[in-house]
Image (cartoon, helix red, strand yellow):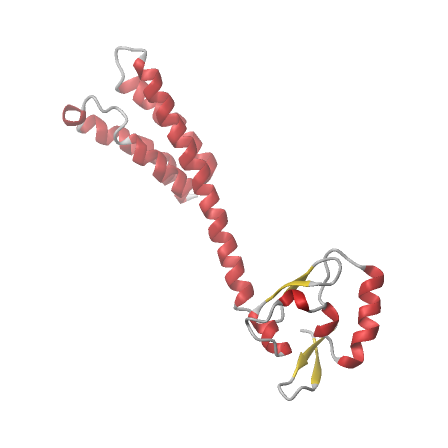
Length: 191
């Protein structure tokens, strides 16, 4: 909530700065409002960034663009387009950051986490899962099947069950298999 208030205050801070320094920065009516639009989008996200861009446009138009001239429309359009771009690209950056964080959580988990396509071919296995089954980091995942991750005595019954149901998204099972470095397999109860 505080971030959003600060984000919405940015155009008014720009107005104050520009009013105090107008004799120095005139005729650059948009000078302090570009950073204000950027800060608003950065702190408040897309919606607040768009609102701050609209507020900034109204403030500049009201206080610094007198008397009206047609060229001000072009300046206002360029400013608005830039404010919209800041708002949308900042949200995209946030999504990329969230995906990176989620990926780091999966990669650093001590549990086996894997993703397979509907035919049972693994698409992704996290590093802990690779260690649990004795697979090297450079081993191609696509050359294996889900059944390869079960203990030998469970492979046929589980493979039949997986083939029969063919779910698009599989959930954790009640047990998991790990290969011990000597080549034997051990099954442990899931948490």
